[in-house]
Length: 303
Image (tube, rainbow, N blue to C red):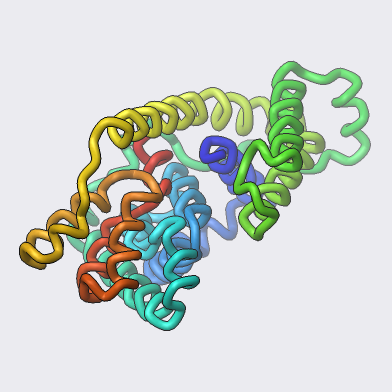
């Protein structure tokens, strides 16, 4: 699900860039504070989808490293839903604090490292726009012809996206209940299938196939699979009760909360969400854990 959604987000970002000739990217990049606000707003959305979108934009240098930090600080992963369900009032307070802290931290990070181009280490040249007639998003009169002479890239991408849509409808991908997360996955995948079915051969070959499918997706899939497998093995063989540590000293619990928050998965942070609900820890521990916690949003960034 993670790899599929990141793939769809990257595809949509690339499509919008070509469709608008890069104007939206230039406007976003021209305003640092606009980037921080936008990235923090993505991060504060419940769940990991906003964080995935921020990673997709950072990997193409649409937003700065500081803006990415703002998104990661603002996000709390899937635990956001639990906080809203158990204590909505305090949940909103935590989200507001994370939003403000994310913007401040993002601005500070960019101020400190502004002379360094961290994008160089990504091995990605960013979003590119080639000749207008070659980078056509919707070549009228040629779509049917392109399908009659369907390239392997178009066929493979269309089959993969169709399989993702079917898997979502059958409940094999996404949450078991039909909620907004599943609706978002379905809509985004349908949009991606439309893009693959209608874009010009050059755009599909150069931007979607060579750049996203072949360059980014293998790393994202393998890293996600590897980390989740490692976490499964660790949680199956090692366990301890963090609730017992609350009586031994809040500073120790604070350090543990931050260390647990580094785990790139939604789930471990749930311990502190429930401890706060039962009154065993103060809001400062919950906030610190929420700041460090990124849910699954960090997985595609590791790739």
